Image (tube, rainbow, N blue to C red; front, side, top):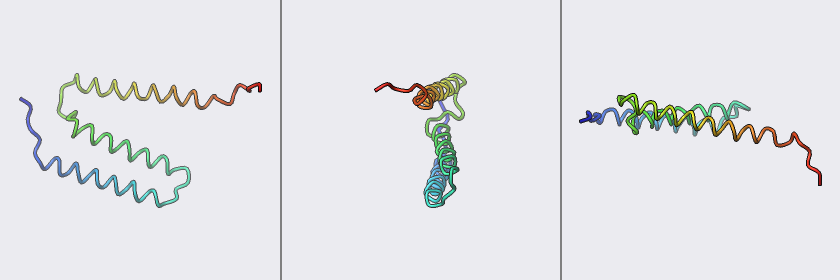
Length: 97
């Protein structure tokens, strides 16, 4: 049987997610130029990591679950790279109308 996480862990996880939410909200009102997107993505990735580690119970689980989580992230990055590759090369070939 798996050990049950203490409520203290969930309270701190909630506090961390609320702090990241406040950071996201605050950055939306600050003009950082091209760094707005970078900061927003960094905060979103941090939120996803916190959720995956604690709410999906990846932290403290078996190596097989770690492998499945890493494989999912690699697959996501592969699909994003294909999409960005398509998007970035759309204007290369002129269309004859």
